[in-house]
Length: 487
Image (cartoon, rainbow, N blue to C red; front, side):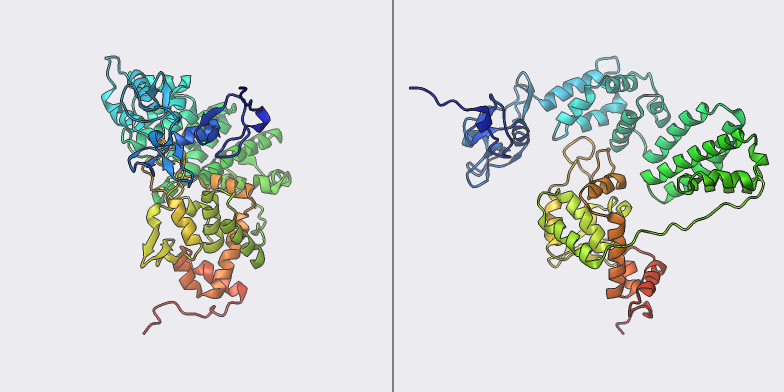
């Protein structure tokens, strides 16, 4: 009796429908791709068959999760070393045991034991729910070199000591892990990255006088402003990018003067006008350097040109409502992007504020959902309330070493850090959600529906901002007096 041969063009994953090659894994439910198999072997819960809490990679006909025994034909996934049920990495050993073995070798202080100061990092890494990311990270040669240098005391276990390591991206990631595990004291990571960038940028300036001026400008203006902002809250990537651009443009302006045969002390109005004539928008951030130079008497008084940069026109109301419907109905868009877009389109929230929201800001009182954006919290209407509740149970980046216990509403890939506003903006832009125009449209609509002071308090805006928008929109609440009107 002949066996039916399966052709490659007839092979599809039974879970996601992806086309497969010959030799693909076959489970009782059918053929399964590597991605779905990996995801299944990282799924734990209560088996619908035996009601036991364990690994549940199988899929019941009704969609429920089955353990390996109830599913049958999947295999045995008990680790031969720790006897825990998990996806095995090599030779019958689970990923967590392999990671523990590797970390012991990398963090060895030379006595055969993990360096005492690095034990919190060791424990945090080996206890993560999904060890594959940590295994990939620790497989890189530069990561292994940095960890060994810290473990053996070749580099001081301080923020300044970390600045001696390379590459800077890997060091920034390691620094976040060390701060989250308590090995290093908290510090503003963006400020540290800027200081490292500045230490590499200034020595590259060949002219000694230019380098001296840039050092003074960086210390007395740029870094001074950043320290002030850092005292109020964590610095954002855009604030650091602006600081870098100010240094770059100051360097370019000094080079522009040198080409004209002038020093900064001899700069004239014609030199300034010629600089901005080359492109005002691209060179607008030179304002900071010029004003600092004039205040410190390092440059003659000159007029700095100014052009108004108005915000883009807001979305029409029907466009905003169309985008809101997409956040509810389009299941092909990741849930985290739909939630972020709804916060922009419903509550006029900037992405910098959305990124700092925590799960504690999502409230439920008397069966109704609320989100704390100001005081009092704002009500969350259906169906967005249901979307938000579903999202809380499936936030990304919570199964790795970076944010296992994160309370951020949008956890990032950096330890202890939320997703950056730039990342959120890029994701929403790719999906066609215009964040700035959508936020402007939302706030203009809201101040026409309610008194400007009430909108300001609930959404975290300043009273003057909402009052001005209400006046521009001709709202009927523009003469509303703030205060308690219940008496």
